[in-house]
Length: 84
Image (cartoon, rainbow, N blue to C red; front, top):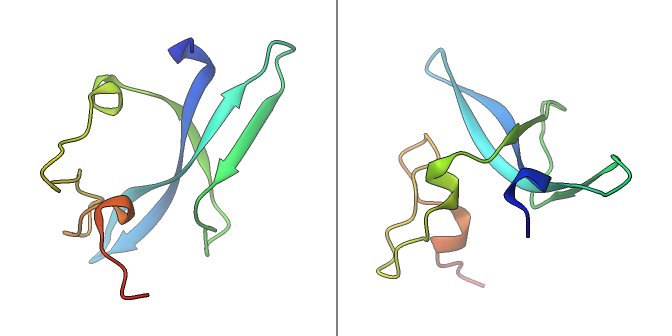
């Protein structure tokens, strides 16, 4: 897939007076210029930002469980083990 057609969806989160950007979904630009947005989480503050993917986003994830940081000192939700 053409990387220019895929975007990341972020939501600003406040912690200790700082703003962190939490990735909560993916967007795709269609051939007719419209956009499809797929959310993995709902932003409680109602704010979304759609950005181009950067080089870091295009790198493969580590297979040893070391996910990228989400700005809160935790791993990405995909890497977490849920108790249910």
